[in-house]
Length: 107
Image 1 (cartoon, rainbow, N blue to C red):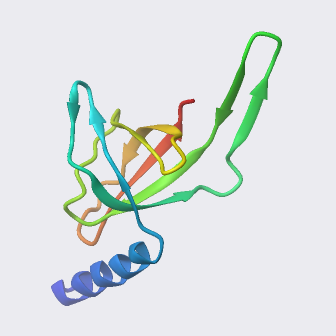
Image 2 (image 1 turned 135 degrees about the vertical axis):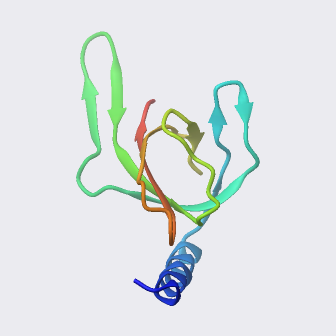
Image 3 (image 1 turned 90 degrees about the vertical axis):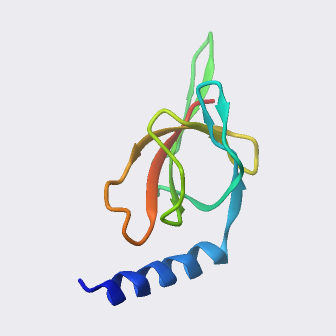
């Protein structure tokens, strides 16, 4: 792909993020990063609720898409707009047009 193709893809992804953007604040160990604007989307069909006599637990995964400057690493934590806590499980390696991470619900 040419540089123009990557630039067009980055522009298209910025438009998609802008349709449903949210601000998240990443926590990395003891460090709290400045708020970043991203798009958080649930990964279809992967949410579930686990209940037993001693505990109740929700599990689910989301994709988090940000610009190429999105500062995120595996192990980072953030809360979504509803207050749910997520932990970043992986960051996809191709960052030419966008940074995409997968995160899992931890509470």
